[in-house]
Length: 294
Image (cartoon, rainbow, N blue to C red; front, top):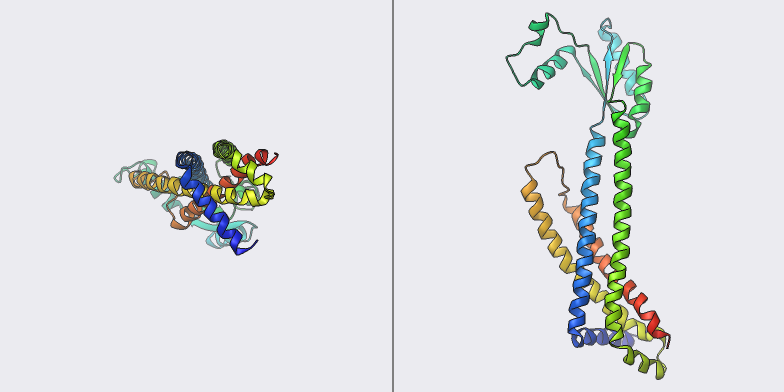
């Protein structure tokens, strides 16, 4: 492809956009709406994944120790747990610390459980975190077999259901994004088909004078890229403004960890911009093929 042809293709694409202003506005609006909906779905998926990841990262096991163990034996058990495959951290929690936490959970600093009960009924324990939260059940079964540990608690049953739910949330979210992408391609292809239909005579004449299919396609492809990029830019501006407002209004709600990191959002916006251009090209390709069969 010569430089002269490239200049010609860009000039023709730009002239077409200016000449068909109504169709250009309609196409840009369609792309913008599709990318906006797609971007909202991706943001929802990313935030849902973030919530699921936080819930999974909070999963830990508590290994309760026999009361008769000495300090030396407790240290040996801690070392043995630390050496298990998949263990991220092991934290010793004394019975006094556990009692203080329990008293704090009642919200009354003057409430003395030890005095009420006559003694501290809680045992020493280890809080164990896994590198991969999904390994918690496997690690818990090994920890429970260590001599000196009489019970391991990690929310048996609940944790397994949590992992099942997070798995399905991710699968459904991905399927939703794929369906939205297919819907966006269909809508964009339909809109661009109307624009191409209005120029069907021009395509027919170019075929009559010997223009190749690809020579005819290129100006339309460039037009599709421009339409897709403009629509994506508009949707990104709307999405960024709306999401920024949402984050600022929900910043005080600590239990909803919204994604606010610049790199993640920047990558998303760049991906949406690229998606707009790609969808514009795909819509053009799908719509243009039928008019080249003349």
